[in-house]
Length: 124
Image (cartoon, rainbow, N blue to C red; front, side, top):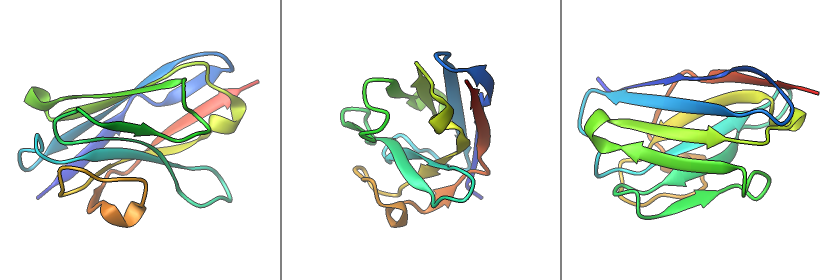
């Protein structure tokens, strides 16, 4: 049974930072791409970032580019999302997702497994 568990969310003031973690269990994930998405109240879920199976390729949403760093520790089956200079519009539930391919992209349909999400709230 594949399981993804996010952590690291919370409440911060604008300009602050958070580091999200996503721990995967159930199988080895070192060959598979992983991504982060977010959903704000009243809005559709949207792409945030992704990292390829070996960590050699990354991608970021334009709205957050320059403020994010995605990384992975294959030995720990964990992917991280460092978020800096947070803005109130970054407030959302953040989800990690696992794609069963080495490379993936921005489309949610490319991801097979999803975590339950972690809340990020940024106050002005």
